[in-house]
Amino acid sequence: MISRSYNFFLIFTFITTIVLSKEMFVLDDLTNSDKTLQGQEWSFFTDGVMGGLSQGNVSKDNISGKSCYRMQGNVTTENNGGFIQIVAPIKPIMKAKDFEGVYIKVFGNNKRYFLHIRTPLTLAPWQYYSFSFEASSNWTLIKAPFEDFKRSNFYQPKTILNQKIKTIGVLAGFDNYQADICIAEIGFY
Image 1 (cartoon, rainbow, N blue to C red):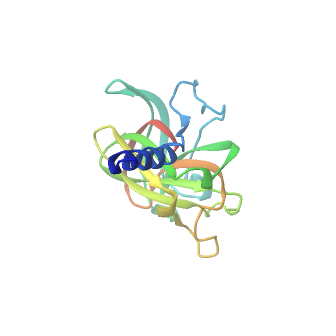
Image 2 (image 1 turned 45 degrees about the vertical axis):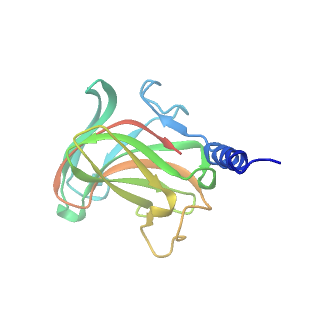
Image 3 (image 1 turned 60 degrees about the horizontal axis):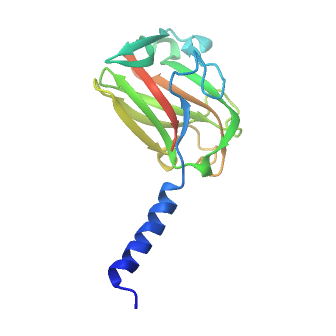
């Protein structure tokens, strides 16, 4: 006869194995000189592509012993603008259903920032799925579950859970402020 504690141990081990079987996928941890670990280049752009007046840049930096991409700039909503952004394509395209969400290791200036995901069904430049977070002045690991991403337009599918991910971006925007955010690692969990 098997004891109850042994049964509990077997069930706990089985459940833990299932939960831990989903692996983290590191997209970029700055070990692949200016490219993601998939070999894709990051792009930086501002609302200037649509007539906005926000300005900024991205550089490599080292904050408290961590290598990072540092995005800085002046975000302004003047002239229908309001963002600066760093974006990387995901190639091969990832299936959202294979992961629970996005994680990012960040350091910032206690302002609100956004993760933006685009899928093959977000065709127009103003379409995306967004998750907001605060980048504190300490290195922080942010986990963004896919179910918490919000669509930008009502005519997009409500969720990205059954879609593929073609780009991921970190955005400062939708308000007037000085952006200063450092990204040490980003990936899927």
